[in-house]
Image (cartoon, rainbow, N blue to C red):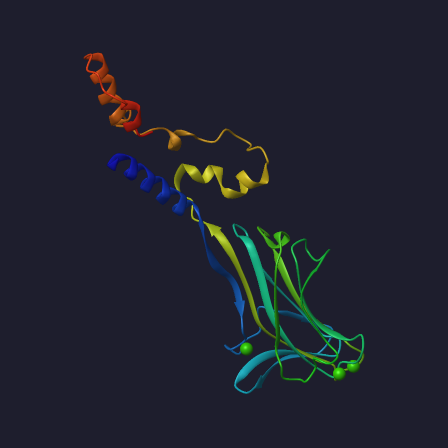
Amino acid sequence: MRRSLALITAFALFIFAGTAAAAPVFTEDFEDGAADNWAPSGGDTRLTQYAGNTSLRLSGSAAVVGATSTNGFTDVTIAAAMAARSLEAGEYCLVEASADGGRTWLQIVRVGDGQDDGVTLHTASVRDARLDNAPRLLIGARVSGNADDDQCWLDNVRVVGITPQIVGARAALSRDVLMSGAMAADLSPMAAFAPSADASPHTHFSRAAKLRSQRFRLPDVSRHVQL
Ligand SMILES: [Ca+2]
Ligand SMILES: [Ca+2]
Ligand SMILES: [Ca+2]
């Protein structure tokens, strides 16, 4: 039994080692006073402070784009916050993400008329498989308004993902390979799954077989054999 327990424990440890941990991929709160991760276009963008918090303000038809990579990360989630001012019906502030170079965008946060008190940061987050394993994930923020006093404040952008904790030969059969259903280009090394050199048949089997061969009668021995 002790040996079985040891095997179960070892297997549980392997499973645990093969699971994953959430890790930050990208964060931006502008508290360092720099917005150099963000490329501006189309209007005025600048850092502003309110109640001790720094945010990136976009005015008129301004937009910014930042980029990061989620290579090696799955279950990727993007969160961001936006405040807005001077929006009328149909106008909005938007945070979105693209994993295909900007051809398609996934909405992360949208703030519209009625939410535009100029100070409240509205936070939302999106988890989507399209965000996983993206060599270049674009994060965009923009104003869709009608005048220069239409303003949006971007803050608290956070990208998190799960990274597999698989080491050694087992890395060849990563979670992505297993889950994608795609055929691996080459045969995966299976040596890591082979029994160890000192592996031996189960102790109880050996003992029972030995006893049988010596013609001892063991009543109900099968009941005691633990697989
Ligand atoms: Ca901030
Ligand atoms: Ca407006
Ligand atoms: Ca309004």
